Image (cartoon, rainbow, N blue to C red; front, side, top):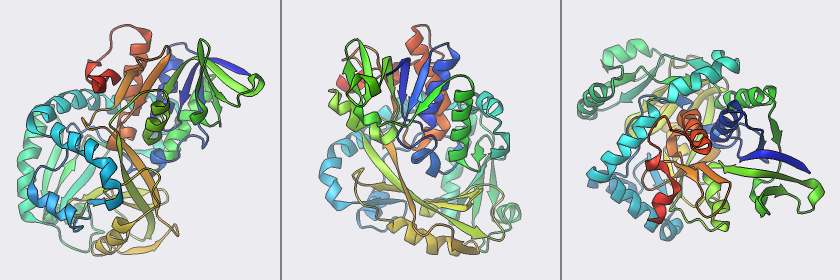
Length: 416
């Protein structure tokens, strides 16, 4: 039997960052994941640490966007019709939280975390020897339509002024000069300069995990879903005493898989998932920095494996079979812009983003149990926010002051 002070369940970016934050404060930590570090969503994201993402993705409020999604003509949004009955309640709450008043409160809380995203990553990147994986030249939000670009400029100017961010609005000629790989002239782009890019997100998480081990931490490949109360503490693994792992306290940081686990323990969060797909393509002349094809919801990220073409949001049940409709559409759309070669993989990768209706992660104590803590629900910003939310949770566990207001993120907000 292995005993520890803390177990952290989940070895994605959030779980590994949480283990490091607790370890830094002197706690003995075991990291538990059946797949090992840096897999699932932490592997397959767009590879951006989005310091500029101060405003979370709200539910569309304009009728035209909703109609395009409803009739299946939007490549940015796709849904499973059979999943709608189970999604109606959380999506209705998502829509309500995206109305102006509630959304402004979500932005205030979300931006307070985002403000610390790159500074929270920086010491881990240096200590893990991962500097070569990081680019600090920002990314292009590109537009095909002059009208869409013009509408975006007002928001860009507001965000830049309100949050002290650095960005440039580029016309089509300037974008063509900055991205000579483009075959088609676009209307222009916004260059978000504060963001960092990661050429291999899964490898970054694995290097963080190796740093955790070098500092004395233990990583075990064990089924985290076997979590159970064990007297005064917690246990995972086989039920016989000799082969289980026990700890006084446990942190659930399993991303999209957290909800099913905590439901068994009596917690009800209105969570849902946005699934996404990607493929890597061989390409002779790639992009110098990541680029979003805004109208089509396609992210193009230069990676060590090739050019990663990543899709928008698919609303479906977590365990439903893959339906890479957006991926197939994206293949044709991107070939209008770039000379793509063959895909590296034979089948698209699929992952799931864990989402809450108020667009804020769940960070804090499970109020029904002693020694149970949560850090999940990061939606599109797991890679961006992993170390920042890890610090916030560790400070709550320590019982002192937190570096930002933690109240907007507490689990109990959904029990009110």
